[in-house]
Structures are given as C-alpha cells and as structure tokens.
Image (cartoon, rainbow, N blue to C red):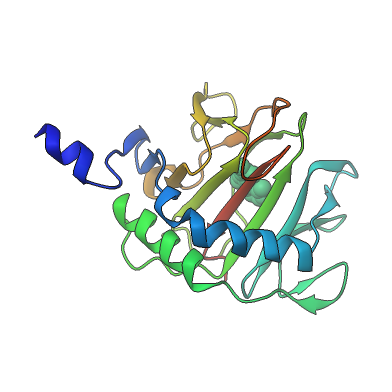
Length: 214
Ligand code: MD6
Ligand code: FE
C-alpha cells in the first residue's frame, strides 16, 4: 500500500467541489518539455495587459495558444482566432500541452478533453484575479484545466453565487486544477501573488488555462 505512493508518479487528487479537483504536482513529470515550450511561446508572443470591458487595465499579462485565444476589450470578454495586438493567428497548441490537459482532465473524470484554447497569464508580484465565472465558451460539458508554474499563489474556488465563500487552495509550481460538471461555472479567482523568486520562472507566477472554447 505504502509502496504505491512512491511508485505511482502522480498520486493524489483532492476534491475541492463537485466536479472539481486539485492535482498537486501533476505537471511536474512533463515540466522538462512543458517549460521550454511556454518560455519560447512567451518570447515569440509577448504577454500584454488587456483592458476589461469596464475600462480597467488587468494586472496580469496575457498571451494565448490554440485556434482561439482569450481576449478582453471594451466590447466584452471572448475568444479570437487572432492576437488583437498583431492581427496574427495564435500558434497551435503543442502536443505536450494537449497531452497534459487530456491526462489531467481524465484523472478528474473528464474523458476525451481536446482543448482549442490555452490562455497564458503572467502574474508579477501584486497581480491578482478577482472572483469571476468562465462563461464565454460554447460547450459547458467540457471542463477547464488550469496549470500553475513558478511562484505560489492562493487559488480561490467558490460556488455558483459570487457571495459563496471560496475555499483557498495553495497552488505550487506544477499543480493542476480541473473543474467541470456541477462546478463548471463556479466563481474562482487568484489572490495577490507575493514577491519571490522561483528557480524555473524567476519573479513571476504563470498560469495556463486550457479550454474547449469553440
Ligand atoms: C489564473 N485565470 O490565471 C486563472 N478565467 O490562474 C482565470 O480563471 C481566467 O485568466 C477566465 C478568463 C481569464 C482568466
Ligand atoms: Fe477563470
């Protein structure tokens, strides 16, 4: 019994709500391939601060991969096949990210997850994301897979109402969170990232959010 804990590469899955789970360290076995891929992407497609529909500048810097990239502007939140700052298509999702997303979704009970969008958020110290619902996708039967890299952060996972008290999840480098089913439209957010230095990312937290948007 104890042996399994040591021989199994990705041992635990922690339920955080109905249909939602936290997979600590799930991305670590793939990090050697994942990180160079993310780093290369961010050099070629530098993340930018977007405006919210209310006219505020978001604190996180954002870039995307896949057929549809997440965008925000005065018209609202949504998905676009092109990078709004260059009018050029986002690059395709690399196999390492597609496979990681499908494996994490599978571990959480969602089979055959094929994302068409990977939002990459870069959080400098002090950056945060307020409680919100993800509701700009076409198919709510498909889950969301979120991969954390670099500096730790507290992920807040609430309920179907903004006023529902969120649970606080201390996310570390390589952790994955998957939510879908009954919790697909639950409120969630990220507390202000504390200053620090991480051996892989340096002075930031990076989050990959994988979705089937179209
Ligand atoms: C994160 N991001 O960056 C979580 N949701 O850790 C989100 O939950 C998110 O960045 C919808 C749209 C943009 C986002
Ligand atoms: Fe979200």
